[in-house]
Amino acid sequence: MLQQIKSYLKFLFHSKNEHGVHSPFVFDLVTKCFYDNTKYPEYEALKSYRKSLLENKNTIEVTDFGAGSRVFKSNTREISKIAQTAGITPKNAELLFRIVRYFQPKSVLEIGTSLGLATSALSLGNSNAKIITLEGCPNTQKQAQVQLQSPSFGTNSNFKNINFINTKFEDYLKNSKLQTPNSQLIYFDGNHSKKATLDYFELLLPTISNDSVWIFDDIHWSSDMEEAWEIIKKHSKVSVTIDTFQWGIVFFRIEQEKEHFIINPNKTISSHLFERIRF
Ligand SMILES: C[S@@+](CC[C@H](N)C(=O)[O-])C[C@H]1O[C@@H](n2cnc3c(N)ncnc32)[C@H](O)[C@@H]1O
Image (cartoon, rainbow, N blue to C red; front, top):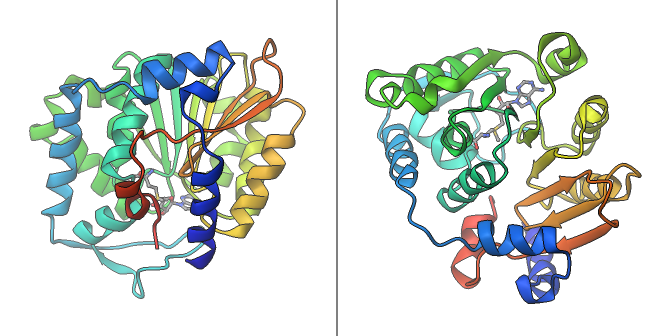
């Protein structure tokens, strides 16, 4: 926790807004997407899906993967509690929606569905995109699929573009060439350990194109994740990166000079400290 606070203060000290950005590609992304204040009607759908999870007091038996939970002691977990702790925050869900809306990727891969809070944002961002989302825990995956595609939400045609896959990430990614077309946007939000993050990065590298957008969640979650982020930034295929504190966004555009940006996606900072840091 102390490490996260230190990292956040460092982030605030180094972060820039659009005025410090000379790359037109990044300037446009910041001004037209990060700082886009439009109240999109899709935000209501995001809120309503989150509300349905937060009101769900049923419990499920989860299979624990990844770096382990800092919150739960038992594997019998209340849906509402999982939604409160494991999912993307409301502000970041809106930002993820805007990023997908801005880049309009044709194919999206999410590594780590949980209850589908981020999946709903990915889906609404481009209803024409094929969304593949991976989850290892069968009960969590089933809950996400049933609840997101239930009649109350399933009437929203956007959520029909989601393909839920119950798999261990490693198993899927090792065979991904055989299973799916390359994904243009990838949201890495599963196993938040250095080794797993770098393994998934390497396994997916052969699929990159000039238009790839990769978003790594929780790059400052631990010193391990910060090390993984530094290694990713240095990789020869990576050109531009943006550190938004919660996310590390990676581009492989060959026309761009290698450059690393630290950008606060919110113009006001104070109220975001506690929303951004998952203790
Ligand atoms: C942080 S949660 C995903 C949150 C989700 N993207 C959201 O914003 O709502 C990570 C999920 O990844 C799953 N997971 C972690 N490691 C995994 C692995 N190696 N294989 C399959 N699933 C895994 C966990 O079960 C958990 O549900």
